Length: 331
Ligand code: UFG
Image: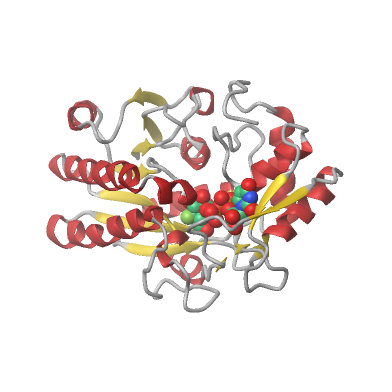
């Protein structure tokens, strides 16, 4: 298939682009390069620089490339930041996606895989979380994902746009060549590994008084290669219909357990400093991924936390300053 990957120069997007190419698909990457990395885009993919909020740029792209499907990874991703800048998140993650969907419909491209998030659930009623739980985001980032999921139902019934929304839990780990490089970094595992690399003095631990066994938040870490694989399966699913799926391994680890795993993997003591809770953080997010397994045939392969952290550690050690080697944004 000829696939457009919006945000394909980013962390999960670039791993998906690589797997799509290996499976024989033709790939165009559309990325505004605000957080993406040119070095993460394989030479076999065509890279077009542009923003989904730019209607003219999208129209030009869809007129020149004959596309079969679109996978969307664009948008802003930091739940904590979205509490400070909700309007920015609504602009990129809602207005931008609406422009993209309208362009798709206008050009008859009717298969769409959407990067949604566990953040749509907010504080879940029960864990593991099944897809039928109510959507009650506790931060604007989650609200943007829930909003697009709701709009997609109407694009489906009124415009025939078949879509799969994939609700990721916490993406983590790396492949041999592709890894996580955000600037500034806000995610737990890369921050912990930056301490092990001597680039930070300590891990700021946001909250140690949560109602969990060790007082820290619990998350479900899913390997980036397994996430990428799910997108290929989702693209096939769009041929027969639309759906919404959780992607996680079904087991939660507390922030302290993640730090402990990183100590074992790196052999570094990784000092921690207790800090206040971060606004907008749900206590525990753990997936039930049974639906993705049953309907998409998804089988996550790298599910042990230590293996996930070890893959990230290998990448961070071989790319101590990320893709470009730039120092900015780190402290
Ligand atoms: N944390 C710290 N210190 C840090 C960074 C993070 O204690 O320096 C804590 C957070 O407070 C949270 C946990 O580590 O309790 C995980 O935080 P991340 O920022 O790594 O990830 P989030 O769970 O906030 O969010 C991630 C993605 C979202 C997605 C969500 C789904 O960034 O896009 O997982 O579970 F929605």
